[in-house]
Image 1 (cartoon, rainbow, N blue to C red):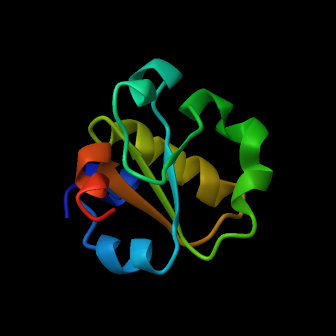
Image 2: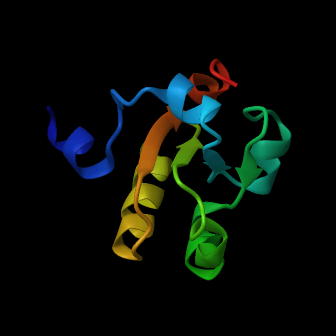
Length: 102
């Protein structure tokens, strides 16, 4: 596993389809403008820079999938959430990758 995958969880081998089917909270961490241009069905937009102020929205979810344009920002989001006690966070990579399972 390369260092970026270790740090950010990119290229996840998680069963995205199964996690989504089980009711995962899907969060797109791109900007509002990027989100408006297209997003995975059922996802919510919480831009990366707003995550620290929005942590309560994550507390009661069994599984969380974060996504963005390429997987970089969602990797950062995964680290932020885990450092704040949010468990079961999966970096879904690009929103297009997540969207194929929605």
